[in-house]
Amino acid sequence: MKKNIQVGSITAAPGEIKLGKLDCGYLPDSSVVSMPLIVINGSEEGPTILLSCCMHGTEVPGMEVIRRVTREIVDPKKLRCTIIAAPILNPYAYNYHVMNTPQDGYNLNRVFPGESDSLLSHRLADLIFTELVGRSDCIIDFHANPSPALNFTIVKRGNNMNEETFKKSMGMADAFGMTVIEMITEHESHRTGTIGECAADNNVPSITLELLYWRRQDEESVAAGVVGTLNVLKYFNMIDGEIENVDVQKFEGHLTRTELTADKGGVVHYHKSVGQWVKKGELIGVIRDPWGDIIDEIIAPIDSWILAWPLLANQTCTTGDLLAMFAFPKE
View 1 (cartoon, rainbow, N blue to C red):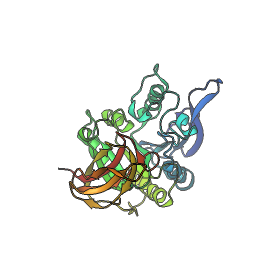
View 2: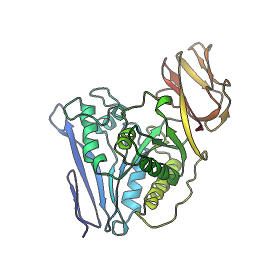
View 3: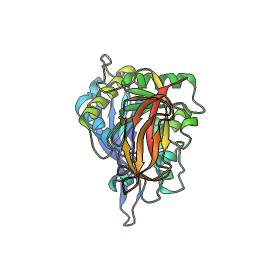
View 4: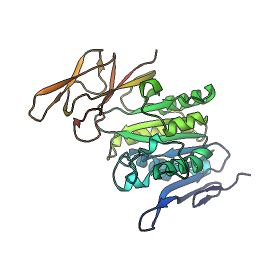
């Protein structure tokens, strides 16, 4: 006999969907800050999948993917799993429309697994790890890139990850149906302490989705995200059906990526579009000063496809800002 599921304020019986919350802190006026939750306890036994979004308060497309999948499509009485959906992992950042936790300035996705008696972001990471990641058998974590960018899926190979978990993560990514990027630490040493890395180190298969766009929900990207999420449910035999094609621009095969950061500051002008193949040493853009003079050239660091021009503010950069992402085949 399948049992009730308890998460935060929610108790869901088999075959039920319940809405609730998980309290995660207080504001200066002593009001409670809560994380919204949707729990679907399928009528049949199966694994638990976590669908999460808004780790960063500006990255909202996954919210609509989660809403459509959990509130419009999935039938709890035909579900062979439990779905825990957290559409706003960081309500502090979300409510202020910013990427990082405003109270301490930390990027929540750099402090996992967190600490229960430390700063706010670390406490929030510990709560997510304990209450959500710790009870999940697989995870889809939704993020988003600013425009222009392509949709893509990230798989993180953790330091302590066994081969079976890695294969399941890659299987999830292939089933989802977008460009697959294996994140290699030596290429992105600044991206540690992520929920994906934490899941990998605890042998929980997971994928990170980069949808489109910051602060907006692009319909093509959201629709593709819905199909991809259902594909993962099918991959794990949580629902019936055949895996479907996801209709977005993508590159075949398993790729990795590298990034380019700015040496100079100014206005960024693109000479190449996302999705284009560029050769190492090729001029792909320039940086101009406010008077219109070119003060630096942007040169492709490797033979690759341009994956994104992920400028976080205006179409400008400061020294050290992330300028471009490049996808290329793994050796």
